[in-house]
Length: 122
Image (cartoon, rainbow, N blue to C red; front, side, top):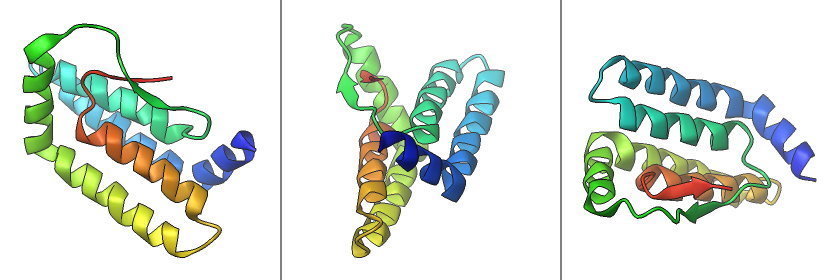
């Protein structure tokens, strides 16, 4: 069932959304300072391209206050916007019965797009 959900997701916008994250990641990685945020864009793109069957968990690494600082910078410069967009899509998909599994995937993406540092996709 996860395979079918991923194929439908991919056809109806998942591929384009993932390419948007990949493009943003490449742009951020062009600057030396933006590499940590670019890597997080690639992590989110991996979840966006194939979300069914994956979960977001807190990582076991101890990154301390640097992770918190990077998450705050992420929130200020686009994290809130992307989380809000995923939240809107989730609300629209929850209206229909057929869209509920896809809305749940958007809610998973809200969690990761708010604070990607210190999270891991399994």
